[in-house]
Length: 101
Image (cartoon, rainbow, N blue to C red; front, side, top):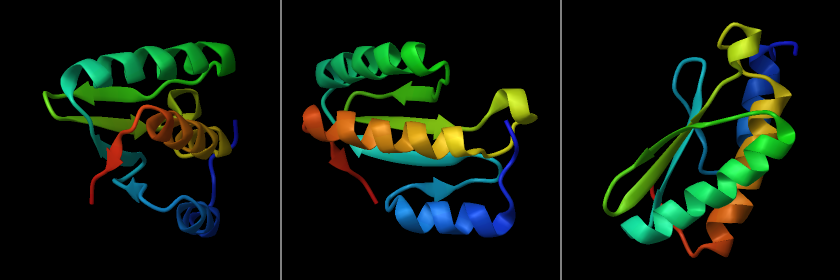
């Protein structure tokens, strides 16, 4: 996978509101109760297994945070990261997770 240019990253971020860049990673946090977060993780993990790309996930009692980067591209951002971000947004909506600022 080819790392994205700075201009491509800016364009992708504009197309994926709510996701923020933290170095060579994009992150997003959702409010969701703990057990709902567990169910959401299982759903995300099923999709990740199918597409062969995985997020780092941090579950707390009232929120879940996703961090995405492409490890195989030297921990750089690629198109695959933004594809996964869009899929996570859809899954979060299906689970009633609330985007956090």
